[in-house]
Length: 269
Ligand SMILES: Nc1ncnc2c1ncn2[C@@H]1O[C@H](COP(=O)(O)OP(=O)(O)OP(=O)(O)O)[C@@H](O)[C@H]1O
Image 1 (cartoon, helix red, strand yellow):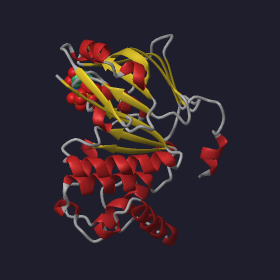
Image 2 (image 1 turned 30 degrees about the horizontal axis):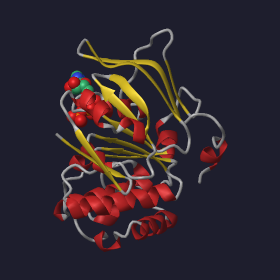
Image 3 (image 1 turned 30 degrees about the vertical axis):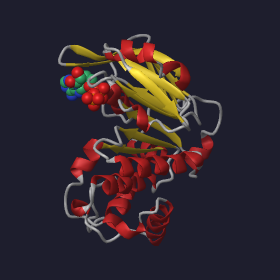
């Protein structure tokens, strides 16, 4: 854990948003969002396609700026302003966009190593220190992906590449791992492996913020679910109270059936 991280180990919320609005093309894609996520809390953000889930993540990562309304506030660990290296130390991000950027010939080891430089691959100007190399080996071992060291990411399966990108996100030992639709296009076995990986990370005390429309992605360690609809928070609370047939039917606008088994949920209609 870095000094910066230790400084913030208090009761300050991890993320606080109040009356947060984001507009694009004259439309509020996020509208009056009030959201507080505590340190140590694992949260899933669930909603239909286009509801605003990824936009919330893009606000957190600084890619989208909220509108400067008078009563708007947005803080991460109590602070309104963060520079990129600080945010990078705090959060690891895995998204589909990132995987698309990596669709070329870079070996697994370099993909993970490039997490230290927030780059796509390793370049001559990167100063690679021995402790970075050690960390890459450690993280790959922890995630049980050491055999992917020499394999080109362009030749990996989607599941392998996804776990590699999680390793890339973890090299800084971040406090928070943000997963945006992480299990898209994974088959049943890869999905299982992915969930086991996420559980292992959560067990080590890393906060998980998961964005998904797939209930099966929500690991038992996630206790809170925020439902998003049309850019607004539709409901927010304990997983058991949110993942009900009544709430999900209203969220998706059609009758949804839900089943729970061993802490995992699935839904169909
Ligand atoms: N840069 C942008 N310019 C214009 N519209 C945008 C932009 N980014 C997002 N939107 C719109 O905002 C809405 C919310 O998008 P967002 O990607 O946050 O949804 P989502 O819930 O993550 O969807 P999905 O599940 O399909 O990934 C969508 O209608 C989308 O078209």
